[in-house]
Image (cartoon, rainbow over all chains, first blue to last red; front, side, top):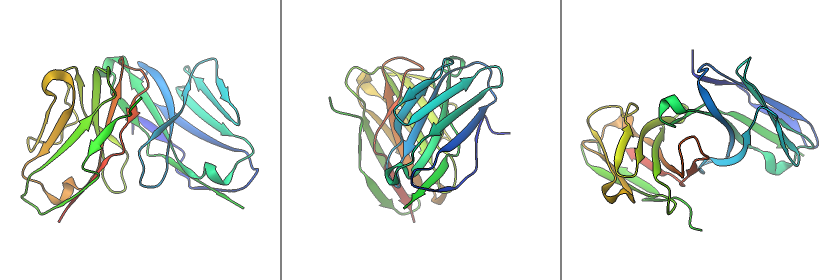
Length: 111
Length: 113
């Protein structure tokens, strides 16, 4: 079993749709959680950090459930520019801060 | 503020040759990480420096890979001799503290023929 598992995707949605991505992690010592966005042939870029209290940034909402070791990302009112691969990233202090990546979930927003 | 930079952006070499990748982290970031994404796989950790010291090199695939960070500034990753399975995109990332947000460089796309 992988340390970080994401919805396999791909997700193809129309503009304006709401879409949710899920991610589970196996290391209970995980401390920091992030969603990164990666455009085709580009580097991963931080989308948002994820906290137990949940956090929202415009159309994006991230949630963390430590008990279930589960992270989610909700995108509301999808835009064409949201098309990308979304990476769930987990960091555990016990792993010297190295990050473990999920495979990524690809989203395509269509007109 | 300048981001993480990597050089070269692309490298095409033949099997058996040597290639050296360079990463310049964000100024002031003590933590520097190397990651690799091979075709069809997830991004995987290679190693982690804190300043000039190797903190964790558990992800280095074999002894053909050598990473250095002399002086605790930029880092190099040398592959010698390169094999076909080394092809992929090599990302460097840096952070101020462990478990902080890691900022990624644009990557070096390595193709071994």
